[in-house]
Image: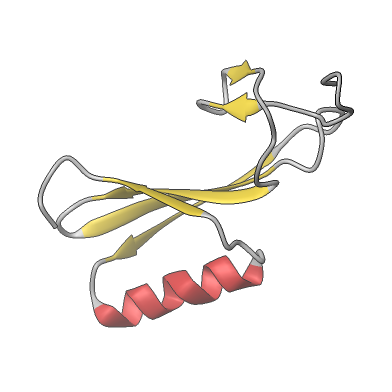
Length: 88
């Protein structure tokens, strides 16, 4: 716990947990590829509770992008971070 009373942690991967401030208790990371999106939602309510990871892959077709939005809505996820090495 920080001196201001806020709890903090940051996730690099499921195996590695490092300390930092919790800004978004529900967030999604998306690895963008030409044909697919590899997505992980992390739900981290507090440092006392083990975070929950939800993984799913979607194609880049419109019908699957709509499914991605529905999946994000299902988990009430409004914070998304995308990574891509190409120009998509």
